Image 1 (cartoon, rainbow, N blue to C red):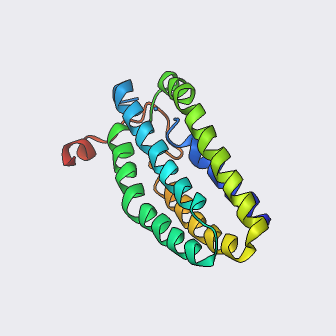
Image 2 (cartoon, rainbow, N blue to C red):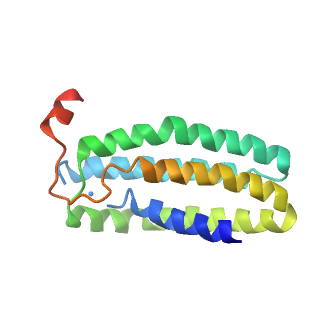
Image 3 (cartoon, rainbow, N blue to C red):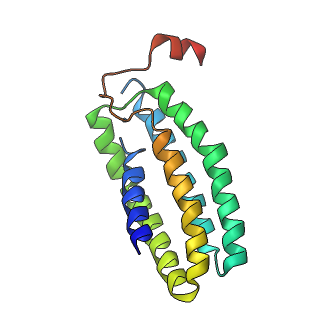
Length: 159
């Protein structure tokens, strides 16, 4: 249960990642937010697919693939856009909150059910989920930055 509590803490932190937004147009941040929500949805789909240890292994591989291939793409987009303003952040929170809550509910329901039915499968799944959320946190280029810290000109030109 400690790992489950840890995962919930990480998920709450990750949910805030796409919901924060500056240097770019609000529509750009909305597209990025939609991509982040879709990525979380793909991860949750994998969580819901687990019924036993064999399907847990398959789901963990798919979740790790998402972390390796999709998270860096989103991180690069975040770098290009720069951290959003408070106004855009608030608008994004309102726009994406319902979708993210839906994903959280689905994930929690699947995890609680699996923990009851097959604790060993749940333990395997937790490892994959931890790697996914760690990848998301580690790749957050906005961490500790203010909204007015637009991407460096070199980064913009390199894009």
